[in-house]
Length: 240
Image (cartoon, rainbow, N blue to C red; front, side):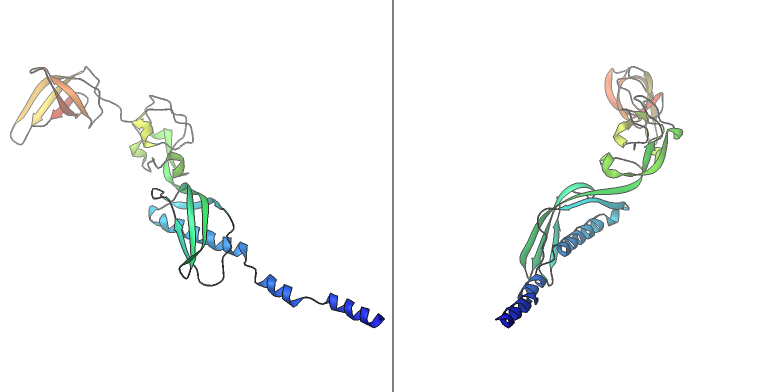
């Protein structure tokens, strides 16, 4: 009786091969998540490769269980049609094996895309005319300016501020405007010319405009309002 009890006790101490085999067959969830992340990262880098940006994925959240079976898999990353590859977006990763969907996982991403852009060195208030010492070029995330930016200080310097811009903030192109050199009501010289003839008459500006702008002017001889292009602070040109 004592020998039988000892044999049973020793048998209980032995590992169970059936349980060990079942443990090995369990899918690796962390490996599945890693492959999904790799697919999304590759998709983003490919989508933004032609933009000349420094890309950094700040957030990548996979909703649900990303367990994947063993064997060859096909990954398809689906993004909103209007998404440019930066900023926040809701994606989907569809994984197929032999044509059968084995995973359809929603993924939230936030992508930082750095590029050179004009940045204010001081607070710029409404009506300020920007000088070369007011701005510099630094790297910023284009998502912070909704894609409206410029790398060229020449497109900003000499422009007038339309809305206040904080120091150290990127200057959006819609925050500035050209400085008018002709005021509404001002007397101007209207020029019409072609290869063989040039005519000048006196007119009155009906609206303000910067160099190159099309404004309305009144021909004081005919009292007709006509469109004209601003040439300088005293002259506009009309088609002939």
